[in-house]
Image (tube, rainbow, N blue to C red; front, top):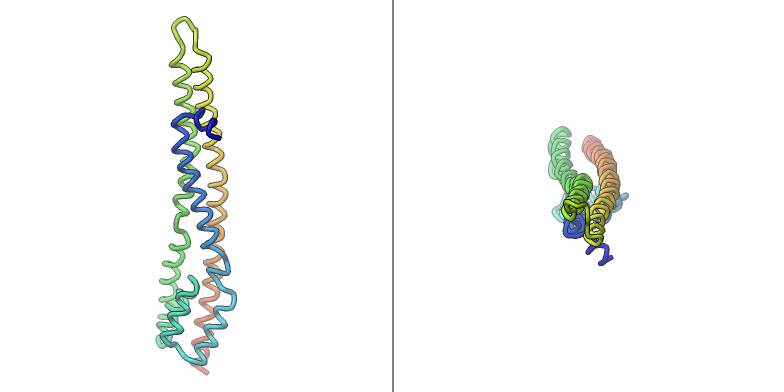
Length: 203
């Protein structure tokens, strides 16, 4: 691998940097966007049960908020429990926007890398071609070693740019789809919370 990097020349380093950033984002988002971590399956039932037993206490608010992003949305609604249903929904929607923004963190960077990596590869290709033409003389005689180096720069950078871009794009679209799906589930759970709490108040 070291020999390949040497053969690719200095233009490969921005691509390597992009690959490291892309890999770090992919690992971090895989961990952060786990379904059970974002939308715990039993959080709604547990929250309703605790409301019935201890009420909207500060301990319940704190524990629920720290549990997950869905818990943060629930707490925004619980803080408006004594207000109208519309006010509770509005608070939940505002909290949902903040949580959605947090879940989309780093995805713009990942999408940018997916777009930029092939361009960096193209830049390396152009630099390699410049080196190839630069070693040509007026008589057409060239140094084979320099010619091979220019070709290596051109081909390796183009290949590495595509290698970095393809998985970055795939995971960018995957995470975007995951976030959209999680947001829908959070909205469903939040609506159920509003209906159940206000239903209990009217009984």
